Amino acid sequence: MTKKEEFSYQDAITEIETILEKMENEELDVDVLSFQIKRVSQLIKLCREKLHKTEQEVEKILDEMEKEEE
Image 1 (cartoon, rainbow, N blue to C red):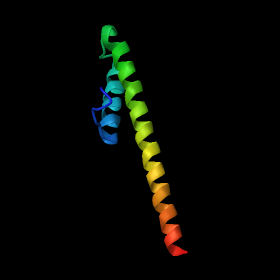
Image 2: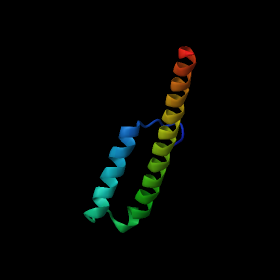
Image 3: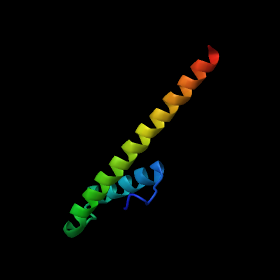
């Protein structure tokens, strides 16, 4: 996945779940296991970034709402 490639949070979670399910069921070939683990790591990072960005946006909106009430 390149940085320009845009995944939704739900897409990332779904892909993580799919990879983990394959790992649990021993469906992943040893040759691709390392690649899949790296992929999961990338997806987790993407999810964290999206959650952090969303948290910042919500805080900004709440701050603006408080200022409007004053």
